[in-house]
Amino acid sequence: MPGVYLAAILVSAAGVAALDRRFRLAAFRSPRRTLLAVAVGTAFLLVWDAVGIATGVFVKGGSDALLGIDLAPHLPLEEPVFLAFLCYLAVVAWQAARRLPFAEDR
Image (cartoon, rainbow, N blue to C red):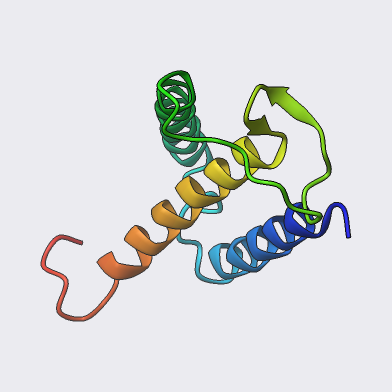
């Protein structure tokens, strides 16, 4: 079923955004810093992917869950969306962990 992977990423991102909004963890607390962190992290991971693709370490597997749109050889459309989600999730998780009672650096 084409697009199910992208839909899963977007639904997951919406869930993380809902938690972010409810607890004002990242984007709903400091939108510019969050956007910068997500953009830099995503760019770094895309470069990492490009190196992996160029060296033959990363290859695109066949899956009916992908839309079938490639941004470059072995780089499906879903990859940068997933990487941005991963970075956003990391920022939200980091900010949530900082609020734990035993976290020293608040």
